[in-house]
Length: 207
Image 1 (cartoon, one colour):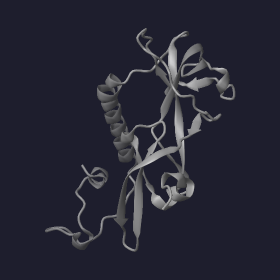
Image 2 (spheres, one colour):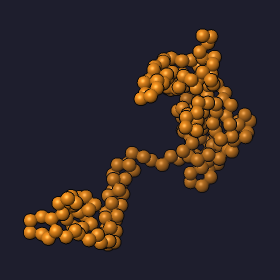
Image 3 (cartoon, rainbow, N blue to C red):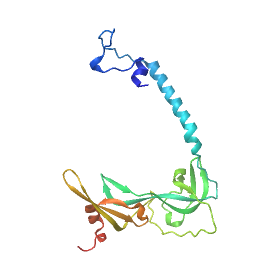
Image 4 (cartoon, helix red, strand yellow):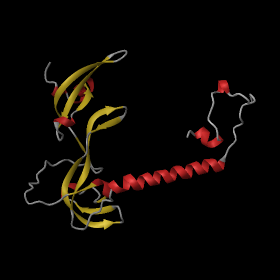
């Protein structure tokens, strides 16, 4: 039922037609019914917990690792294009694998990092980690990234794969679809052409 009906025990009527046949034309007084509000909150809480147990908890298991497991660490690529004062983000990448040395509490792990990542704190939250299952057929080779202390790295564009012109109310905006170095063409992003010309003029060549 609607919140009004739950609180006052009747359906809400339009302010233009407060009265019905057989009723006086007096507007109802708004009275705080704390007990009713609390009952509604408790029932909503029970409903949420029921849905959580029935659907969410069955599909989601807590992620746990053991000492000696090999894992990947999530890093965030940052591109230089600025939008509303914030740097645009691409899909995260994983580096590794690295070995787990120690469990810190219930949600953090100490990782054995290589010397190239000596400036990065070696304790990570479980949400930053991804399990690696060893396989002799795997050939692990990846390009080294200049990872910052906050686990981000600067991503650079490779080429422009498409171009469109959007017409707004007062002006036209030219967008270019950019493929980034450590991302596939399916992950290419649309950027403003004027911003890309300033930051990466080499993409456009001589015109």
